Image 1 (cartoon, rainbow, N blue to C red):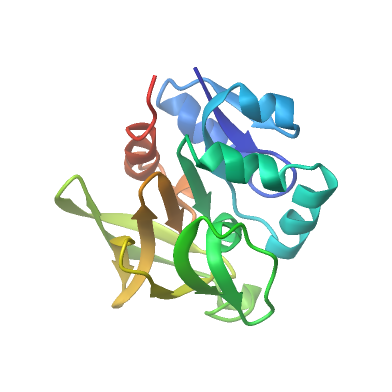
Image 2: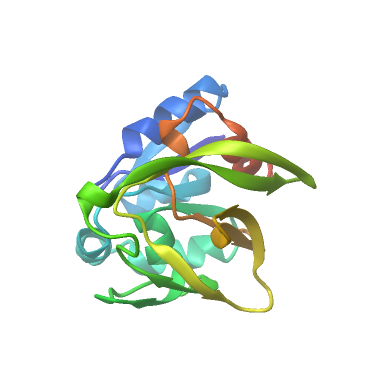
Length: 189
């Protein structure tokens, strides 16, 4: 069983390293055929406008929407932007897979990036996890069916709706596999 990692642009290699640490086989996804071989998909951070354009160029937009109808998808940073219902501040064409509104670059420019502890509630347990916020987006609002899972200074930074998981930070840059492990538990063999 493979977990796909969208590998068109962004930090897909770090997600691959994290999943390898958990003993999970991965497939770097660049085509619809590769996507079809996967049991779940991670859309990594990167540049959301570029990723959106590349989804169209590689004819993956509709394929990912269909895939998400049956299998779990996890988006981090730019990936969370792409999965959202809508995007404010420099909008991009999102996939509309989670009922969340996201603001791009909400904390400022690259120089304003930061690392800080966040509170994460996974499987009923709250723990501190290191959060890397790199030109990070912010979840502005969520719909009734969306469950918040992590917070930083009162702001929701991770949420899920059914099989869709988003994080506005980069869990793949830590040594803590808790967030990826949580995503893997959504995968049905």
